Image (cartoon, rainbow, N blue to C red; front, side, top):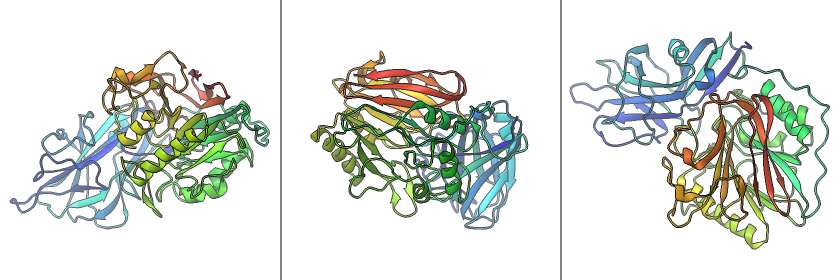
Amino acid sequence: MTPGTVDLDPLADAYVRQDMATTNFGTDPTVIVDGQASGANSASEGYLKFDLTSLAGLPITQATLRMWVVGSSTGVLNIKSVADTTWGETAINWNTRPAKGGIITTFAPSTVNAWMEVDITSAVAAGAGSLMSLGMDEATGNTDGYDFNSKEASTNRVELRVSWGGGGGGTPTPTPTATPTPTPTGPTPTPGPGQTFSFGAAGDWGQNSNTTAVLNAIHNSGANFAIALGDFSYISGSSETAWCNFVKGTVGSTYPFELISGNHEDAVRDGQINNYIQCLPHRLTPLNSGALYGKQYYYDYPAGTPLARFINISPGLTFPDDGSYDYSLGSTRYNWVRDTIDGARSAGIKYVIVSMHKYCISLVSGSCEVGADLMNLLVSKKVDLYLQGHDHAYSRSKQLALKSGCTSITPGSFNSNCVVDSDNQFAYGAGTVIATVGVGGVGINSQDPSDPEAGYFSTYQGSNSNPTFGFLKFTVSPASISAQFVRGAGGNFTDSFTIQ
């Protein structure tokens, strides 16, 4: 077993307030924990949920809950076990909060604007391979409160740092034998106007032998370029240049490796997107006027007579230099996406392909992080491909569209009227195919075939079903788009479909 360390984001975090017993605070940028004394102030309790399925079978040696303190307490805080893992971030309130169990540990934070690190190794080791919920409250007699950044904060978000086998970096999936690395070459020759081309897409990369295997697979596939769907190095600090060099060492120094930010690059965490784009710049056809490469931009490909418009966006992310990227109905960014799709149609560009990091519908218990308005816009416009990462697994939908009986897709439920076709031979212009490709190299998590949204999906793989690192390769011609999952390492999962 190769030692390793990984930082896990919560699947969900929230706090609940006694005096606002039916109010949900799941999207707040802070988690507040406070006690009550003789009714002088209201009690608040915090809840966290982590997906530990990718840690199954690993010898956990250290697990640290890391919280950025924004409101300190001189009192004692309890971290407690919570058996219920079904609570939802946007639904939990004081009245519906799950019961807390025994105390895992206690701590007393005293410094603001600093990391508070609390050892919860025993709880994580016991919960490895499943979901884990934690509750937090303030010990009796303490009432001055404790606030820390939630996963919705713009920077320094709460995280769980887990090491196994002695620690030292890597991935929580057993490391396979790496594919021999070929001598890097330049990119596949650029297609002429209107000619067939191919590209690959994957997200959630890391920097380990699995990542190298996926990069080798891209290199050997003949794809003209690749799109990285966010979450790159998973190494804290100034990791940008090292990761760019790691990528270029396999695919080639001038290979077009297009970037769109993930939540590991939008804040001060594992490098910043503004630095990554300096060492892996845009190398394809010209970007749109006013483009923010790495955040929100589009390009048409190939040059001259393009077959496809590629639209890359950052819903659900918050950047230190330009704030939160909101794509709700009527917002400036929503309208930009709408107009950019319509512009492609008006220009006679046949295909529209939209990529982002975070997801809306999926086969995990997380909420719709990009917003239902955006997802329904893309489906209503019948964009051909809708690519995403963030979920460290692979899932691919049936062809979806809004029509009679389906005026919108509601996250957290399934409406069969929204499915146009499910036979993997899809008609061009009939709807949208959504693909989650979060298997670029970091630990793969499980998928839930009983998820309320499962009816929208045709196939999947995860830690509980043939976990396979790889990418999705698309061949785009004047007549069709054909897609094939290409293995890099791990299992032997396959998937393919055609839009024609």
